Length: 301
Length: 305
Image (cartoon, rainbow over all chains, first blue to last red; front, side, top):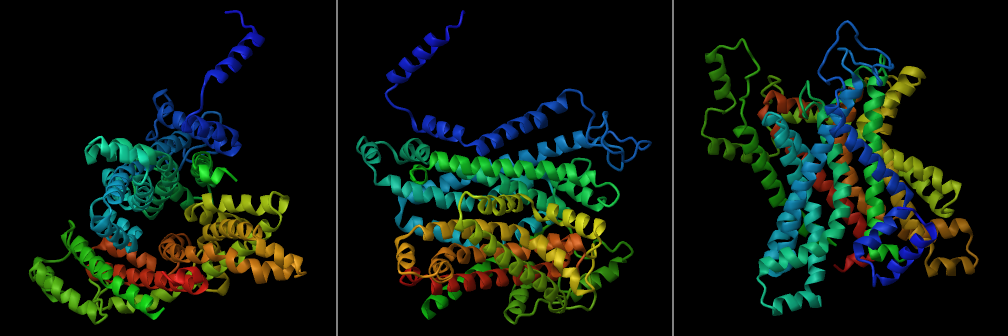
């Protein structure tokens, strides 16, 4: 189609006029797009995801292949990030490690989301005695030194990666529950909920279809900020030796291995540390950006 | 105030009870028994040892004995380190962890506050961007990355400090910086935010109009309210410093309490694990209470709740 720039621009303007208003999400997206740091973070994360989840299937060297004759070498054209003590290609190890770290971060966040959102919504919607009991339970759980419990659980029950997801997810839902509860309590007094009640909808439907979708904004923001927290916890555990077991490796284990050898082969520490920190950076910036974009109160000033 | 403290103390009793119970059953019911690591142990000796430490009794009886001991503040004998009481291990190793923790806290407070206040005085200038970018870096560099990097630069390349060990006073510099780095960064961000909010308020303008010197406006008028967010951050900071010291002790090979906690769980050293978990729980709950009390003392708004 021959492109006529003026015409297209005119059509665009016309279309914009037709559009009566913009939805919250579109608005938020526009605000987010203006935030350069947040967008840079989003782009980095997208590239990282592609690299970690797609590249390993495109025939790069496996993370397990050892080459004892090679040993540790500096970065070169064949091994972009060099090789480790067993001659394994560090580039593919970093990518595979990223896959585990990101998976743990996301899976555990999803677990914490499901528990936290449902718990908070129920507690906030019903209020009264039930709310008091449920929140007291959260308060008690809050006071537990949970990092210590996570370590204990990981040591006592054989370090399975599934358990790692569950355990981390199960301790990270507390904040989410509190936030969602607050939101739901505020929503409960609004007219559209009253209308839904007047229509005779069941409580389950009101909570699932009317309450929870309206809390999604803040949930998305908080989830983006939970992922780095969980990745940190996973790396912390792996660094102490309780995370994933060799030959698999997450960024935490790679950093641990690198730290042991940094005197002779500093690149073994630098590359995984660089990737890990850059990911945390991006997630934090994206989370901050999303908060500014979605939280209308904060963006008014 | 007293009723508040009393209420909080009462609340912490069920929490501690739950922690003690949970830990007890988790440790006892987990796969693996004490002395599994000792390969050359005849069944008779093992049986003797199990009886000596009371592992042959039914579980509920063990539980009752354990709880009674705890009430007396006795954590029992270690099963791994023969003839050593858990209390003694805590007494020997905790001062090291405590010292690193306090130094890290001091480091975080001093550098975080200075950076935050400087940044808040001229927002969106170089004196704001430089400390705040550093703070962002500090937040994104976890202790186990920062620690090895500091060792690489200051110990191995520059030879300013020892890379590990606990012998001369200089040995605590790198661990404290590693542990405190994240909190310094966080405090910097919090204090910048808090100060910016306060500095924009009317009473600051009034103070300036009345001719108070900039120094007086900042330190006398603005700091009081602007630094409140930091006080509420103290509780999580303390808990974080305690668990964070596990990593720092591993990086710098320090004789602190963290190593004992980590190895005791691997060794199935029941009394040691249970004792240390309770010890940490009491510490964290107590320090959290302290932080909250300070917060209430400083913020009159909260006093009525």
